[in-house]
Length: 114
Ligand code: AMP
Ligand code: ZN
Image (tube, rainbow, N blue to C red; front, side, top):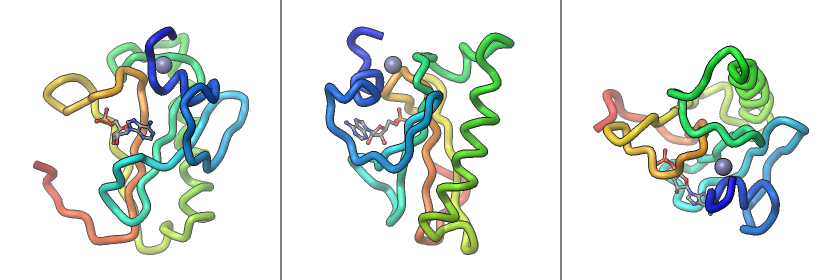
C-alpha cells in the first residue's frame, strides 16, 4: 500500500536487516530494539491491524507463528523464552498501520507491560 513503510521494506524501497522471507511473510530486525533480540514478522499482504483480520486473511497468523517458531530456534532464544506482541490501535501504541508481530527475547521481560 502506498505510503506504508512496511510495504516499502518488503519491496526493498526502504532498507532493512532481513532475517527471513518467503512468499507470504517477511521478518526483519526492529530498528529500535527493546531487547537483545527484537525482530518483527509481517505479512507481505498489507493488513492494517488485528482489527482487519477476517476469514479471507486469518490463515496468515498461523503461518506467522510457524515462522516465529523456527526463527526463535535459529536465533537461540527458544529455550530461555521470548514474547510475541501485537499492538493493535491507538491505546496499544500501534505506530505502523501494517500488522506486525514483535518477537522479543534475550533478557528477562517484565509483566504486566506499561
Ligand atoms: P508498533 O509500535 O507496535 O507499531 O511497532 C512498530 C515498530 O516498528 C517499532 O518497534 C519501530 O521501532 C519499528 N520500526 C519502524 N520503522 C522501522 C524500520 N524502518 N525498520 C525496522 N523497524 C522499524
Ligand atoms: Zn503495508
